[in-house]
Picture 1: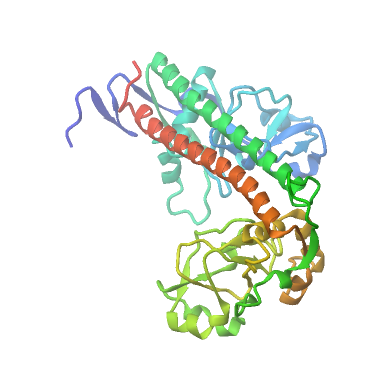
Picture 2: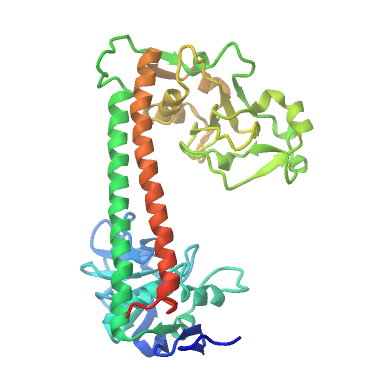
Length: 425
């Protein structure tokens, strides 16, 4: 293939002629990883212990913290972090995530699942972090190094041998500045989304418990059993899925009537990634277990028990699995979305948990769920509450869409800037 003018072929593909390449080992003064045996040093306070779950999308995430009282020996010294160290996850389900230490961590150490690269020139750190990040061309080396492995993982030799494309230093700085601006925007959007979610949670706390009444509403709130919320004018408005013997894996086909599996029932959301189907004939045989868009489905099984979601309009009808429960709300007295919110609210969830059976993984039956109560206002107030919370949902959804669009923009920028297809000179 003919090379574009001003470009050259290298071990990591075509790059501009004035770019250089180097192995990560040539750019580092230390490449190492944590060791086993740190669990005995775990504590409620002390030094921060950086694990693979803390290395996310080019940055460190300490939503889930662990602390250690480290050993006072060479092992502790070897795995202690310094500012501008580059971290790479080397085992587990998130192999190849990278982050740069660019915040003051105090005393901190790495686990056996994290690789550490201490660069001889720290100014390279942020650029290399972007270069090796998921969705970048450099990350393809990480994927290739795991090819054929039954268990994903990286060795220190893999890390030593990673090639890095290096533009002139002024272009590195320009690339980092451009991508950092997008990261700053993403961080602001994440913070705003988190704030809006907290505001919605606070609004739910007030509105779903009658702690705050909306202006103009004075009707009495009453406790209503879930079974009495179901529409008595509709067949099978509150019913469970089929017995396992009535719907087997041998009934599954590639297309037809969608079966809602347990993993599709998320905590307040429908998970659309796992798809199995059965024939229309089989679905007709189990007509009492059919469920339709806009209706509520609850899970008999944890985690958590009695979680619920609303059936999406992806198909005309669905067939529940054995652990699903269909709820069709009486529209003359209740609003479906209000009931859905109340089912997923902590108070109801806690009572469902207590009514369930099992020690390791809770399970609740149709009878127990039928008798659980929901605190309900008259229908007009339900609708008014739903309107407020739906507007908040719409605002959060719009922000999430903007964030997702910005992430896609960043991925495109990385593909262009980190390969030299687009130059910032």
